[in-house]
Each structure stands twice: as structure tokens, then as C-alpha cells.
Image 1 (cartoon, protein in one colour):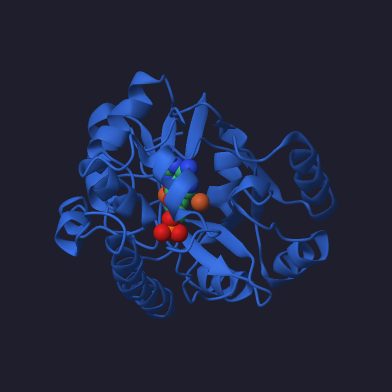
Image 2: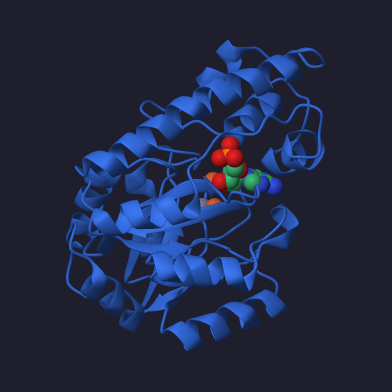
Amino acid sequence: MSFDLHTHSMISDGTEPPAEVVAAAKRAGLRGLALTDHDTTAGWTAAIEAAQALQLVLIPGMEMTTRTDDGISVHLLSYLHDPAHVGLMDAIATARGGRVERAKRICERLAEDFPITWEIVVEHVGPDATIGRPHLADAMVAVGVVADRSEAFAKYLHPGTKYYVSQENITPIEAIRLVRDAGGVPVIAHAMASARGRTVSVPQLEQMVEAGLAGVEVWHRDNPEPGRRLLLDLAARHDLIATGSSDYHGTGKPNRIGENSSPTSVVERIISEATGSPAYGRL
Ligand code: AMP
Ligand code: FE
Ligand code: FE
Ligand code: ZN
């Protein structure tokens, strides 16, 4: 009985509508899943309906992009928050607005060297979707500059390139407090993903625990083994939830749905800490 607690649909940078993500979870033999699109809850309704039709459990969620004061990128998963909480919704609306401006600036820089236009980029962004670098990658694939998103990131979209533009984000501490205030359960995604850039220190993680962090995503393909041990140790010392998830993005990434998963006990714990929104379906 397992659950994939980190998946993306076309409502952000996944390649399938929410209902197809749910169907993929069913085919993989999962008991349920969390839909965690970047900085949005717009996919919840469609995912809930699809899960009810397939008798799967659906945990409404999202993934917030945050940045520490010393510039380290932290992705924060939120489960079961109130999608009408004004402070949290303001924060993600601001984040989505900033993402559009940033994507335009990256596009301008890419356009100096490649036949990319904003119109081509926009064609790859789903209706109501949160834009991100994967959509710029899709545009580069469309004009034949690269074969797939992975090549686009490796060559042109990672922070070390001349095309990269950083974004203003709230801090993980601010995001954790907002999520808790909205009745949600905040869990750090792939905290030890060193290939993505600098990762936070244990004291920084402990400050987040102090602020209300509920859990850490341990079993994720981007967390190397020593990082997993560090996270498990942190979880043991502070009684945190330890999750496993795929970070599925449809065909946008090699991650297969259910490749890492969490047991029912983890989902029960998340539900027990949440007051903002129900989980859908019977465990
Ligand atoms: P952004 O939200 O604009 O900062 O873009 C980050 C997103 O790009 C992450 O959420 C990942 O889903 C995606 N991403 C990062 N690295 C890669 C990669 N190598 N291949 C495909 N997608 C990636
Ligand atoms: Fe993503
Ligand atoms: Fe992430
Ligand atoms: Zn993710």
C-alpha cells in the first residue's frame, strides 16, 4: 500500500493533465498520490475527480520555491493546506508573477543566441499553469537546439550559464510559517540534492524545524546516500515525517511515478497534522 507524495502535472511543469497523472499512479499500482504542482493549487479539482473515479487516495499539495537568506534554493512541499488562505495564496500568486518576468528575461537572453521567441515558449505552457525553466527547455526542443529537457538544463538553463536569471523568493522559514498557518503540513523536498546546487546545513534545517517543519523527503532520486542518512538522523532527532517520492513530471524527466514511495503510516501522520484541507478517498 504505497503513496507517491510528489508529482507534477501540466498545471506546472509536468507534461500531463492532472487526471493523467492520477491514471499513471493507478497503473503503477499505487494506493494514492499527492499532486504537488509548483506554486499553485489549480490542479486540485481535476485530480480529486480523477482519483475518486479510480478509487485512489488524493492528497492535495503543492511545491513552493523558496530561497534562504544566504541564497540557497529550497523546495518546500505543502500538503493539505487551506487553498483559500489569503497569506499563502498571495505568496504563491506573487511567486507565479515573478516566474513570468523571470522566464521572459531568460527567454530574451536565449534569443540572442537561439531562434527562440516568447511566443514559442508560451505555446508550451498549459492554461493556468505555473511557468518555469522546463517550458523554456521545451521551446528549445521545439526549435531543434536540444533533444530534451535534460540536455537543455545541462547546457543552457542551469545557474552557471550566461542565460540564467535568478528569482526573488520568500525564505523557507516564511513559507513554513505560512503553510502551517494555512493548516498545511510542510515537508522539504530533495533537501540534499547537491547536483542542483548548494544545499542547506543541519543548523539551517534545525531552524526550519523550529519554525514548524513537519517532515523531510528522504527517498528521492536526487538525494545521494549520505544526504539520506543525514535527513533520517534529523528526522529521528526531531520526530519528523520521512517521506519517499518520485517527483514525477510525465515525459519531462526520467523519474517514474512510484519509483520512490511512502507507506500508509506516513500518509496517516500527514493527515493527522493537517487542518486546512481533507484528503480524498479512503486510506
Ligand atoms: P524553475 O522552477 O524555473 O526554477 O525550474 C526548476 C524546475 O526545472 C524543477 O522543478 C524541475 O522540475 C526542472 N528541472 C530541473 N533540472 C532538470 C533537468 N535536468 N531535466 C528536466 N527538468 C529539470
Ligand atoms: Fe518541476
Ligand atoms: Fe523540487
Ligand atoms: Zn517537484
